[in-house]
Image (cartoon, rainbow, N blue to C red; front, side, top):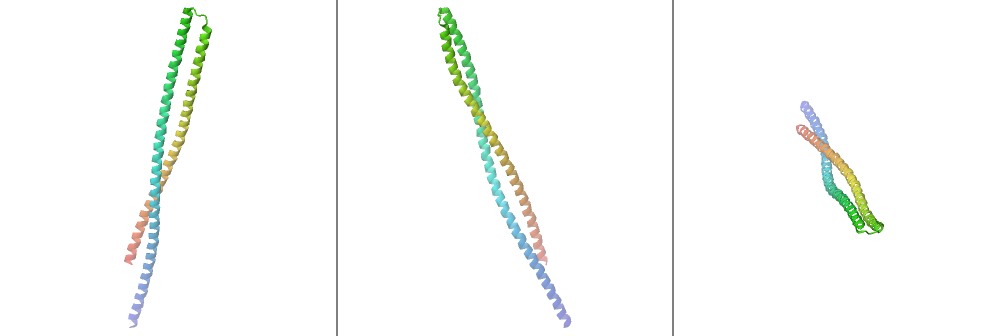
Length: 192
């Protein structure tokens, strides 16, 4: 009888030990589950931030493309303007030379007045053209600076995007590792 009582006491201690192990394993599983849920939440948050960053980068890239096109248009306009200006200056010189030649042939004596008129009108046209030229160049410089700033912003956004992507990968790996640990603890608890 005493032997049976001792066996029952031993079994009771063994059962208490199993219960304590089971409670400890359950508590650890609950802790790991909380960590896993927190990691899942962080992953979702990072995925959302990553999506926003990608949209922001896409928007910046579209704006940069638009600004580059505008710069190309301005440069093309400036080039056309320079060619037009050169042709105009050349035609004015030819016209002036022709007028001078006809004045001399016609015997007109007021060559200097004619020259003054031609030089004055040519100077006015040149001033106007120079102003337009300077304005175009100023616009081009502004566009170049704007493009540079946006390019820097785009690079920074790409860098931030890469950082978020790396953080998301690290969190995803961490979630996978914690999931494995939780599953192993669950099997341990079942065996106990």
